[in-house]
Image (cartoon, rainbow, N blue to C red; front, side, top):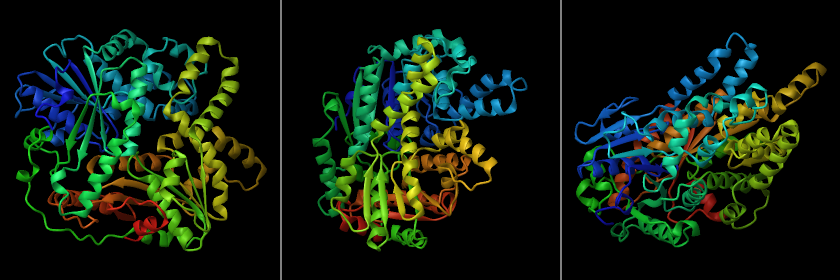
Length: 588
């Protein structure tokens, strides 16, 4: 690794770091800010991450005002609180109609403004002021953003300024147009901000990933999406690669190294042309200036940690959870969690363990078919596998909405609706509708679902009246018994939600946020699964032993604070592919 990372060479004024939770983008953003500040540049570090730990990284309290970092003279930081920004934003929109419109209508507007789209747009509303010339930013040479806006948010801001009329006429009740209701006054500022993002002399986007197929696939999608709207100055950083000097005496370290190198050989085609940096895995947590200064350099890690004793965890395994599931004889098991935590593998392991016990199981996923096929690698008695095609389901849903809600709209209104239907929420709703067709089977067998919708999507489905309210209204009058998919998800006797995470700070925080979302939708998670744990893997490498010790506080937080029941699944030397290894995964 060179002393100067490629992505910091001739750095423009604005640097945006983006990537999935847990890939290390906050650490890399902080390390970059320090390196630029210590080269005599005046730097402002801005975080818009809902689970921001920038203050924790520097060991000081930052918050929503520009705060100097005492130990780095040229560095200041700002944490935009997306939740607080979203609440102010909701109050600005809902306040004027409260007491004028019926309570049920106001409640519907508030619910529509409860989700991820509102939070992201409200955060963007706050930090666009940092992208335009203003007294607030004129003293800084570089402004570094931890967490970039998505292409969907930027496209929404490029739409014609017709949201208010569209909403006033009662046409804007789809998933992401509602949050746009209060943006009209800032249109000129947004236009300038979007132009700054697209100017390669001003802005550089750094895509942060791990050497894993799932994270590289997601980064490839982000690259294409943002390049399509003009943000073409992009760099790739692959973080956390196993150092070659760790592999000599540890089969686990060697296996990780070989897996990572094989993945990098097959990197998605669209990423091959990007300038690329590779950052070696470090043994220490990225907290404090010393750790951050060593992150972007090739400094040997061995000088920075004491050899830890080997860890022998005595935590419940996945099979222990399956014992409780199997006792019911049938039911819906839904795996939830952020991307990259191994939901598909855990779903396959649960399904295989149940089928191995002679129980009938239907495993269904909306992940690419090849992924699940590769994971199972062979057929098994009692196990049926199906795949929902998200693209086909989304297109079917889009056409239905355009033919119904869009039928009476003018050209401008239809254009707005079509843009809204390009929201990530749309795919989740469409896939959920397809899942709903399969849910009925859970009365007679086990249905294991991979890649489930988020808590926000479930809230949106329940709040918009959709299927659930209409059925409840009609059937309530008849006196007949009925069950909607939402009611089934809310019934712990019929559905067990399993949240999958990693034993790292950001993934655990994100999983806790997901649990809070689910609880707001009336759904109580049944168990947590901590996947790919080094602490449970009996590692020998000094670096891996240290990282195993770092996992212990996160495992303790899940066990004592977040989960009613949990399991810890070790990181295996061999990838869990095929029935035999999936059974080993469940029982290790």
